Length: 196
Image (cartoon, rainbow, N blue to C red; front, side):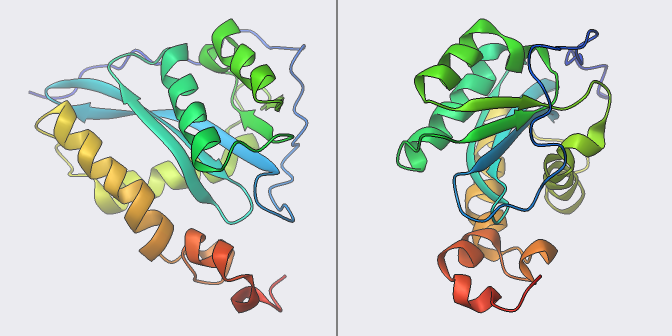
């Protein structure tokens, strides 16, 4: 069976109350200053599933992720909560995303407030405002995922989790880090000395 259309819809109205504070400043000085999040869709078990990922902009490391049958606020909140726990509950992080309704939801914004994070949103319809996330999803889909999708949700979750937290973070060279994988670049900053 061929994939049909997916249910993930972009916001149709601008969110003037959540400005684009990041403003494409994708280079940051230390971990846990700016995180970016986004959602993509995955074909698994003859249906669309949804993947939410959070990366730390410092070295482009994946710090949280979640999968679900629904592209809802619970999905992005679960990915955020994983990142928050994995990173030792940092405060003062700026969280940047597109204008998906999930990121503007009361549930998600309450978690940002509880975690003492500030929120930034891309301008509507401008994928370049969240380019590091677009790049991660492009790498996942072009380098790793089976062309025909996954046989089941469980298979997709296991394989994608391995890609994100193991292969992408620890083994896949990243041009932003001078060829070092994100996690290695983060824990060995002396290897990056002299990089601009």
